[in-house]
Length: 447
Ligand SMILES: *Cc1c(COP(=O)(O)O)cnc(C)c1O
Image 1: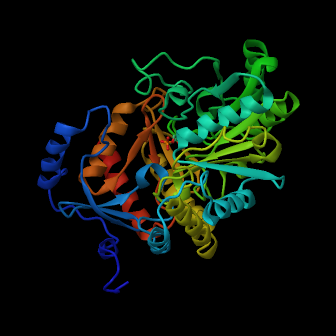
Image 2: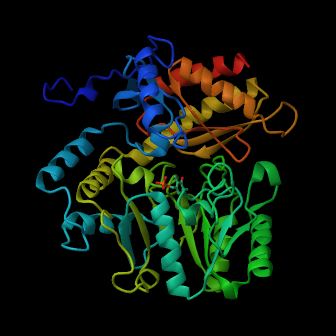
């Protein structure tokens, strides 16, 4: 790594280091400039301004270094500024940055589609269309499902999150903050009960029966085009559905000519120890929406699914100027080869063992932790008022703030704001994971 032509970010040591107040003086200065030109609607979880990021560490303009348990919301899954990704991006950009795949095509797009056909669940014939963001993937999946089924209804689950465009904000469980005052929201969207074992106590079969009753009675299969489910719900609080829940919904959808979409935008791409989280639940979704982790930070997203469903859309009906940008495709191809080369599915399982194991120990010590859950490098703790299941959002806010002051970047989640979610890179060393667990221990002790 002592290559003199290496990017500056390579110089970031893999350690936590706090050298100023958080945010530091330079960050505070930039934040003032920002307020003059960026509207407050665009939030900032922690207003430290980043200069470099490498591996598992982000470094701010004041020289503070944070262990990154956010990874830009589950995007830099294989680490910041991964050498192979950086090289692939530079190489691709030197050839061409854009021609528009729907004007004059190029191989990278096709290669990404081949890789997604290979690595998404199921051995059926598949097609892939590329776009730029998770929300755009979800929007396209809605269009594709409606076209194929010639029906309109869209069912989503309680606690779901699907994006911030008009259609996807209408599909989210929480109105605030995503849709507040931004209506009218999109029509024909139905919110079905989900599986949330910690809170509903239902088995997978029981929860599926409840969902299916809703779909049959309140929506009606004749009017329902598509059901969306995040295999592990992301913004909703890393909710892992009970075993058997997702396969039962898929089976019902197949019987009723309803397209089942696994929204794998957050849970996919090696995050949970499988290429796609659906695999871990034993079902094969009709369509998969993919974004966050697939481009290592370069904007790229996809809908991959059954050929007969994808092929129902007429020529010209799908696409967009930037969809499947060649530089982003090069990044995605590099990501797939890094996952293979470095056995990153196993690395995600290692993270689960070290971090998940450490969190379980903390749960024994601190009754404020109601549940430890998740898979691979997608883990969470749900905080409650001890002895109850009453959500404890205040504790989450305090721990996130404590982490920031001590060089650990944390994100909250959950319908009730009482979930701390952990999205480290799957390559985060055991030493850094243990160090982060130490910070969490102190944070919990300080409550
Ligand atoms: C983040 C997310 C989206 C939206 O993706 P954007 O790229 O932010 O538009 C959709 N679905 C899920 C499950 C997500 O986590």
